[in-house]
Amino acid sequence: MIDAIDKAAGLAAEDALYATRRFRPEFVQGAELCRLSVLHPENDQGLSAAWRHGVALRIVTLNADTALIAEYSAQLAALTPDGTLLAFASGASVCDEPLATLARHVDRITLTPGEAKADDIARLAGAGFNNPQIVALSELIAFVNFQTKVASGLRLMRLL
Image (cartoon, rainbow, N blue to C red; front, side):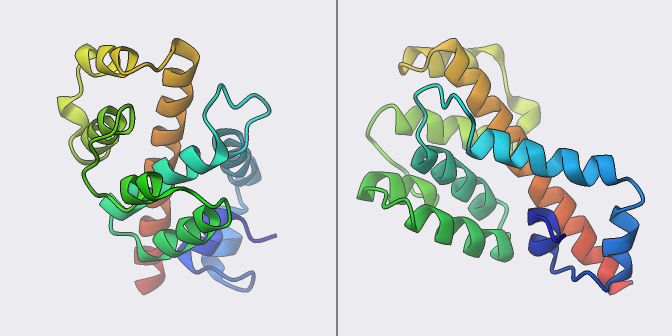
């Protein structure tokens, strides 16, 4: 079965890289379960599916991953987000809190993770995010950045 990473990398079931990924089926299954848990958790901690997909779209936009931009754009559109969330998701600067603080955090973790400091988490709390939400956002940010790196690597391997 084709998973989200296969789809993002452009893999088909007959591709050698598709088969190679299945040498470790626990990694394929684990990545898919992780994707589902960060985008559609049983307890959303007050972070709607639209917000989660907006964060994901911002990350893949910052990473300039056209396949994932198309995928997350379609998923977000189906959730009928408001204009502010759409601007945030597209990578624009936003002034409304707490999206403005979240945008700075997502951008830092995605573009310059080595510069992240404890103060960044404190700023999220100061913008109104509680501890479970900060953990959920951290998991989401980590996964989507992981997804873009794996998909990009698989695309490069297809060229060899």
